[in-house]
Image 1 (spheres, rainbow, N blue to C red):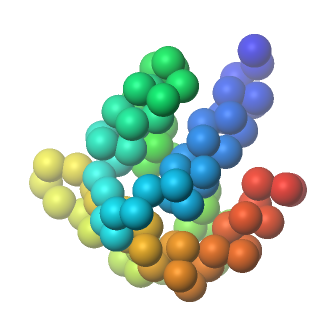
Image 2: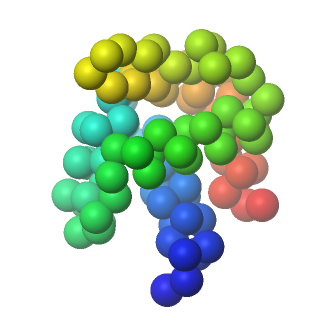
Length: 95
């Protein structure tokens, strides 16, 4: 698998996770852990964070709108993504 397709796969899994979970806020490290448990992958929290940065860029939103930065890691406001950007976020998977 090429690096580019791995990147797309991690992004796809991250977006799917946003819609599958019912939690409102989730840290990168826990998202990575859940994805690894579900898919048997080796996704790091840093990889998850980079995908959220791509999502922010794609949606054209400000850093702090969906991001809560803490010293122990970044939490992402998944409820905001689902509620405010759900349709456009689904379009990202189709691009």
